Image (cartoon, rainbow over all chains, first blue to last red):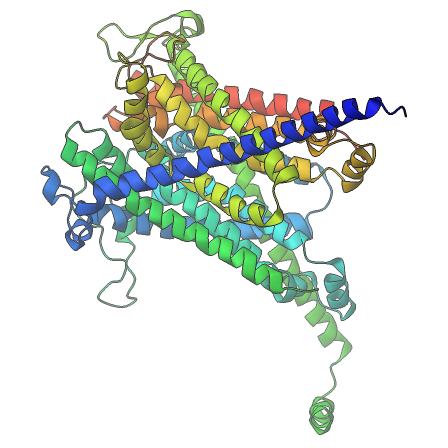
Length: 307
Length: 318
């Protein structure tokens, strides 16, 4: 190497360092766009909805007068719909995940199920709404009820639960299974006593992520024809006499938080926009809380497992 | 020790099982195992039934629709006026709205999402990554109706400061917010793809004297291309199917234009608009949302197929 090359090499190095710094700044700015959007969104809703968030807001029905309107029917509706969603999606999704990981033989049908789960995750949510409108509402005759809505969202988050279950199961080392089989356990005993307990944190994370997606879903529930103005509560799930459970609420009309927010957002009056902001703030807090729980589980529970 | 001994003694004191007892037990156990396996298989089949249900509902209702409206006019008519006295059903305006908003969203999401992915995968320190990744997940978990509200109340007023005669509903504002909403999907999948590139490739590149930036763009990016393109395709199919942001912020008039400054309606927003009204089951308006849904479904299906081909075509094996 000749000595006169050295300055030009230095120049190249300087240029590369500048480029690198430039990109690092660009990456940081791109992240900032995301973070700032989040902060702006949250701050705007908190600021304009703040004075509406009073205890009355949670205990009032929607009203034609914005100042008296509340989210009682919406949050109760969301809660009950989520209950149906969880009760349908969790058993089905976990069972399907277990089947695909532990039981499924390598054959065409298994391949079809696998491809199908991947494709379902990419189907727009509104299409699930159309499915529910055609099948649950009219063919099965469930009507525009909590049952229809809960099952719709259950199908919607099914791929999320299945994928989470499979990933959690896949991370269990083979020797755990071999040890159990070596002691004469049957497949179901291995699954029940080892696979399910060890994959529980992973499954739970997936379920919570799925539920946090379901609680904010608006389009499929509007599509099945949920009403936007509901001034009554479904019958209580807990009945006065034996067997103390009442299933009438499943058939009840309902509204949910995101639909209530949509309804207020689409009104021109400023006062209703305030209500929308308040409802949105509460909705975001709910999804944030659910996400935070799942992140917490992932970071703390999973780290403790040592095989 | 004593306990195990007494336990063994208790076992011994039971009358010994005959061979037929044991066989009966084994048969019962096998039967139970079989039933459980069938139940699990049943659960796994629900996802297939869902797909069959979707296809059946969309195709059968669309079939009724197309017996009233010719497919040719559906595909070529430039007017979508289902509520007029003389209704016209041309999907083109809705398609134009869907493609325009998706395009705006991609112009936002692809550069930002890719930059974030490269930054997180190749530049950021692990501590930064640990903080930022959950944050991006939270961003991806915000309900879309909230994004719609944000587009209408914050982004469009801001855009109106820049472009004075912008209407209160437009595809630009809706598209930008939609883009921000899909950044997390694009960035997290693209980052996963880049992180899956083996360390030895980075080390080889560094050993040749390449900088981080050169390694990122000339080694890692091409090696992860198949995964990155899948991330883009997922982003596109999210944008095409996205409903609430456009329903709230893009206006609800079908408008045959690709100018993002104008209000328009997308396919998904039309479905929402009809569902909000009170259309009787079996009417042509009711059938039209299934035809619209079928178009949407075919678009995402085509995207899925493209994704499949792309993954095959650009896959790098190590």
